Image (cartoon, rainbow, N blue to C red; front, side, top):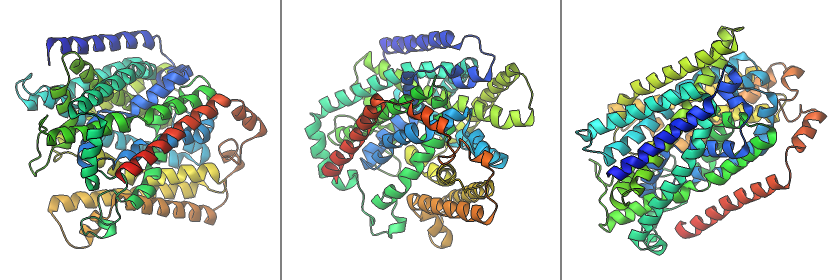
Length: 563
């Protein structure tokens, strides 16, 4: 890092401080602190959705997967079509209900038990997956870019991790969601610019897009977009190479959970100034979501090709092969000129900080609205804002405590790890939300036991995997369960959850009309339907067609190129 690079990073940080100071203002109400006063425009909502999703684990992990397995993870990055579902199907219910959180919405539809279950599971999942993985990925970047600045690469890892977590926590504590939203607009711009330059300079060094196509075509089996059901002679259910059937089963389940029901994402749409802005924000976010394939996955493939040509040198894993999770940082260090290197580092820090800020604020909202307010009702708005800030501090501390455990993770593959964990969490939540919205007969008992059973089965699979890995077990029933592909298991969990929710609901009494009215499609009043219809026009239709057209175009292109 040259002095000019550090200067650009410093300017970036001063810009963040200015944005936080300008956007924070005087906040004493929960609506101001947790939902930015519900004044966000569609542009702010869309940019925030994108920046919240694209964390350092995306940049580092996707580039790593691009280098090691090509387009295998592209299906998750083409979930822009799911954001169209968010815009047209889910947002109208969420926004018009006036809720702050997704667990609160479940209580409106079912009962307080479902709210408690989703709140607690979401908080635990955020702290032990998203916080830890995001910080770990960001720290890897510091370790690669600044190996000697703080004495040793190990010191660089810890300085980078702790500094970014603490700084992000500070501006989230004082600024609330409004500060998070407006800093994310700036961070989205920096992030896109930085990633564009990595792709541009990488292709220039490689010799252009044609050279990448030739290199990837020669290694077509490694980089294939659609993978065979059987790989390396393993049974289909043990194939861990993203088989096409598993992708078709699990990807929509995980996508609907993440984009349409997860507090971390949906909270941005709830901050919109009206339903039209919420919908257009989701569509704009969908437009932005299409591009990570080109600016994060493709650079990983470029890095792989450059390494094999001897143009750059990517660190190797102990067990052999390149360390995919260090591809992006290596390309920054070896390809970019002075000045641009600082811009891309600022972009990486943008990704890390925007994801953490969104996560911290969502955790504070979940704890304050869904747990503390239920235990301590009737307090002042100012008191709840204070508790929200205190909850953010606690999440920051929990994230710091969890860093050593993530530091002990072996090697790379952090993005694949994250998708695997989410594949066990998503199915019961997706099942309950979809059935709850579209079938008025589903009741609280079915939803509660569907959630509980799905979570238990998902965590059981995860625990067995950890035990088998730690004990080195290779044969027997436990090994078979652990090796069952997470994509197929996600589908099995989804099916089990649906069966339980429906069967238990049908064996117990139908829900009261108060649990149906305005919360399900069948329960919409004439006034509701008119309000929803008046919230969209031809521009929303055009935006939808553009997003879907881009998704279909990329699917067709990569299917024909890489098979």
